[in-house]
Image (cartoon, rainbow, N blue to C red; front, side, top):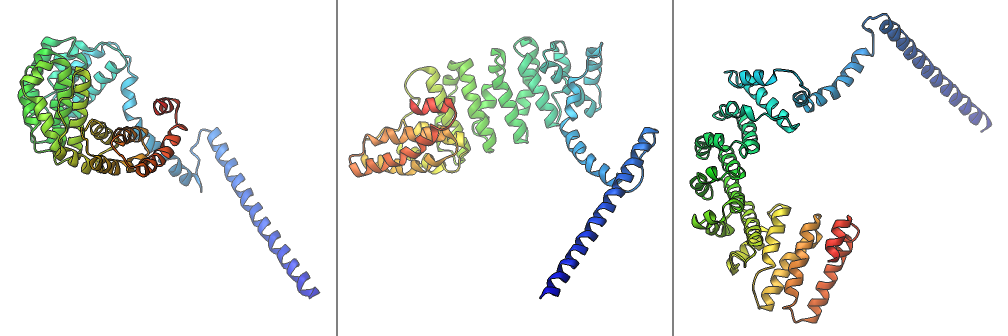
Length: 372
């Protein structure tokens, strides 16, 4: 036993000493390589040898990733004189890539507060292009300067109307959305026909954008919205098969009702209520908020129906978004007044307590709304 213990310890110590010796040799070799590289750098030479290529490849990877993010930063760093003249020439070039670069420079100058309104006709000349990115940039410029240049903004009406009938649904939606964002009465007059087509478009993204455009148009010209029947079209969209379209239509109706200050634009029917409850699980979180706010105004005196609505809404109390939770609480509290069973009321009160306590540990703004 004594010889086994002593022999084992001696073997272990010899292995440890051998490992430490190897580690010391590797450390010395790395130090020698680093000293050699430092000497070559001081002499102005390129470092060579093992380890350099590997370190370069590892260091180049984050630079490549950062380069893609920082590629557009160059447009905000130009302070050249005579830049407006150069931009005019580039905007009228036949090279689409140079044209797009010029529009990006114009948008960058507009973003930092420079006045580039004198380029309005030159930028408008780039509208008729199939390039979606370039079209978005031009439309962004138009939205910003249409108020200051209303007479020149009418030049873009024909292109808007043409794009509203484009085969690409993204371009159709972009044209309708831009016309709704330009708060110029001369342009809103031409918006009626494209908007009525967009509200019945086959693509749900176009229909959703058209519903939001109706809400924006109501702020500019509410009489036109009523005369053209856009409010009736919004009410019909509550029964849309797409939950995103339905939720946006409901959100627009709620906002128009609040801004007009009168009674609700529609009375929620039982069929529409059933469709909304079915679509609430398929909507995004802000679409759920719009649907829950509309359900809180549903008129009913039936305790069983109220209990059924509460049962479908209570899973929203566990949602991560505080707005969804508060809207669900509002619906539950609204229909709890119709329930007569004491046991059901106690059970609902127990379900409401944990989410409300959770909200009181959130940000101060959410705490304020929850306490109210």
